[in-house]
Image (cartoon, rainbow, N blue to C red; front, side, top):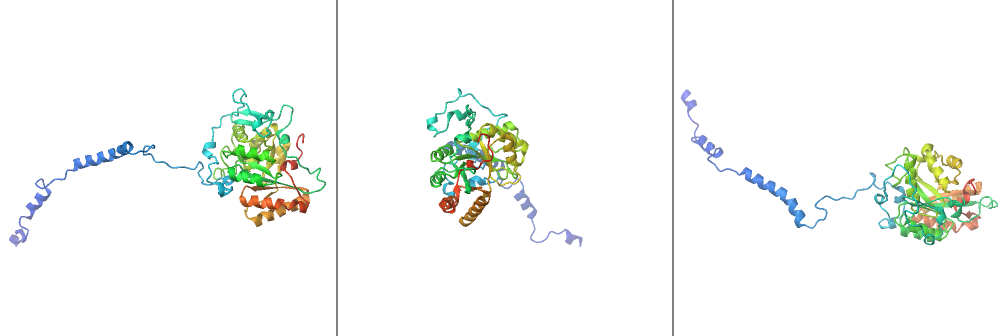
Length: 389
């Protein structure tokens, strides 16, 4: 039995030696080290060769365009403008519009920068311009005359209307697309007030065209909403919690975008307009520069009326947003409500955006007002108890 256990199995003779030859030093070897060095050299040399032999000014760096805001298409003002002009290079990139905000606003001497040629500014008065580090901003003339008085469009007022209902309509977002804006400027009757967004590359030219054409113009100022920065009004937004000097510096940048306007209207800003401590220095600055403030009426928490009365700034508040739903039937329905309100109270103010459907509907509606016994007026005709007005 012991002999059988020790006896090799049939067919296995010499197998152990063969295995040793296959796995030992007798068999062929794989040159691992030379192959590794060759692979490493290839990995290192390939990018270098690409840079030298391929024409690539970026040097092989990855390139991607990134939105300034973390939320894509969060700017409602720009989004509401007609898609007919969204690819135009007339629109300024928010990144191009950004500048560093210093610790304080700065007014510099007119000796440091070229003077303004009044002949090129369509009636803008040199004595109502002050040169800031961002450009010309409005000021009260040495004789005490205010921009709100100098640039307003002549119209009847509530006192001279003899009971005739008065309606003012402010069209916002003008200037973001030059072609869309100039088309609206030419089509809308002169008594429509036009509010210019500060971000168009040709916004100053568009504003000049509107003013020469007879329109009363305003500046839209972006103010912080409650859901900022998810909902971002744009560069140089005035913010709650910023120092007054920082917000005024931002305001000066915005005010320098166009010339010859009567005042400002907010863009968004429910949070800012409810914060008296942050809002009051801005309202006082507007009053000191002879400008009006119009509240777009979208926030019932706004303290704009109280602050305007305290500072002496001419003030008005819109009653109805006309095109929150951009449908002709809805816009006409909102205009009907505006007419009813004006008939009951003597006057009313509506706000619309520069959507093509809104402009077309407003042009058609304006032609019906004479038969209804309603007068269309610029918004300055409906300011409340202004100083010197």
